[in-house]
Amino acid sequence: MKVLGDVIVSPQDAWDDVNRRGQWILPLVLLAIATVAAWWLYYSRIDIVWLQDRLLVGTSELQGRELALARDIMGPGLLALVTIGSSLIMGAMIMLLTAGYLHLVGRTLRVTHTGPSWLVFAAWLTVPETCALLLMAVRLTFGSNQQILPEAANPLSLSQLLDIAADSPWLSLTGAIGVQSLWTLALFTVGVSRWMKIGTVRAALIAGLPPLLIYGTWALVIAVDAGA
Image (cartoon, rainbow, N blue to C red; front, top):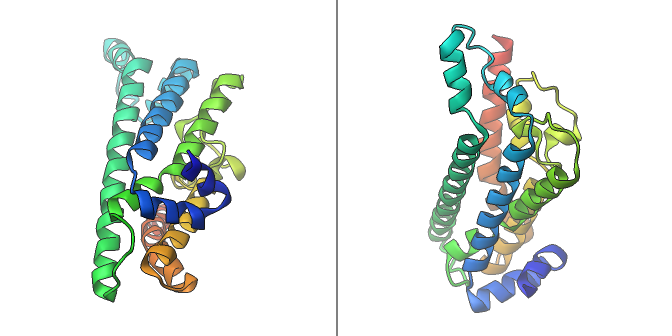
């Protein structure tokens, strides 16, 4: 719990503590709990008929019994299970890819890290996302708006902060990026600098390359499609 607090107020001390103790279970358990809580609350409080209409846009060929069957299948329980399952799987994949990336960078630069494992490092990088999910759960608990798209459910996302329209092609991208993304990048930079014993600028380049490639490519695809 001390490390969790230090992640917010003193990331250097947090990474030093993780270095010494090597605990990884707590951040992953908290991420799983926050994911389940946030998305289960979302689908239990959202106007499901409105959401189904949004999700079924572009399927005008469905009529009568086929449309009724599609709505029955897309019930709140199944949508919640699919979203929670896919989120947890995606989180695990990102963690493994992050650990593999840092291992490769370390070998390429011939830098010996001082921490217990890059998997432990990647696990603690999930703390900002956990905080964003918990804020989302709080918003859903006390909010009255029942017509919020999944991409705009996170109050820290750019889609919310910039008030991106629901029909905008940029909604998915801006929904995936938010204040928690900048926090993760800063935490990533500090951690790489501490564990690899390298300068902040060099660490920032290492930490910033993956999101730059991923979100840059995503933005390019959207821009090309919008201009087509």
